[in-house]
Image 1 (cartoon, rainbow, N blue to C red):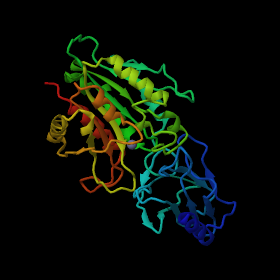
Image 2 (cartoon, rainbow, N blue to C red; image 1 turned 180 degrees about the vertical axis):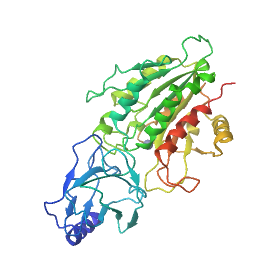
Image 3 (cartoon, protein in one colour; image 1 turned 90 degrees about the vertical axis):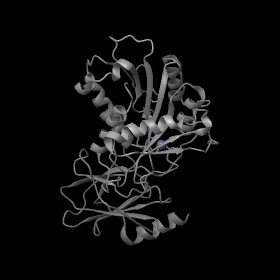
Image 4 (cartoon, rainbow, N blue to C red; image 1 turned 135 degrees about the vertical axis):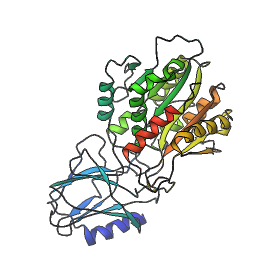
Length: 386
Ligand SMILES: [Zn+2]
């Protein structure tokens, strides 16, 4: 309530609505609360809030454009927030809706403030680098007839979109002891950066470099790049959505996507199942300054040493070691994917949730798309082939 009052006061000072400035939202992954968001032409100020409803209980994700603003003065953006973890420290800006760059934001009195220099008549802003379903489809088109990839898109989501499962292996090598690695991402719709990590993995698996290794002779990779596709497309925050968060849905699924995933995993063979990765992202307002890797000691998969050794191998060529963290919470709302798989498949080396960061990395630079792509590639390079 306090936040709404504060926003109302703020709006009355800076954002007396008038018609000149128009919001643009008619595109994939867009999100803004059209009721409380207003713009003022004379001060060139945009007051806004991400959409709030049952799919956006955590109002993290925004993604919208504006046009009709003054081009002779800086544009001020004021985002209202109700939790310090939600507003991004480094929101992104674009002049064409395609290439984005970071700007620094500052937080005060439940308002996240940042400035944009107008370049032309349109500006797009977002919590972080958007990763759309269209981008994923383009990536899948680019895989083309790659000999190692099989693409299954037979399952459709409740809103009629294809859920992609990529099976990647060297089929010429028939090994009885070939191991399976499952990798999923984007159970939480706002965590766009996790999809660049997946893209880095897919590009590595498509590259000539992978042919010089035994990776695809020893393993079959099962990759589900985008789990909560419907909410990604419609631009929802997703995490902790009603009636149940996707990543709390694994013990008795109400989401058809999760039920289908569980059947796929089971069908791929429990005795071969070796590693499980679920790629996520922290809150953009957090200040974790790193990537970290959870495992769940209650999952009966207490082999944290295997996970530590994995990140140790990663360290030898990246000189960076993500923290391995015991996740000691058993969520009351339901099982997470990493907990479910650790509990059900005891032969797994490890089952982990990787949390990617939006902020400054361990080298003091803001994470960029190229860094996420590298992270994905390097995770696969750390999978042992000896
Ligand atoms: Zn998440």
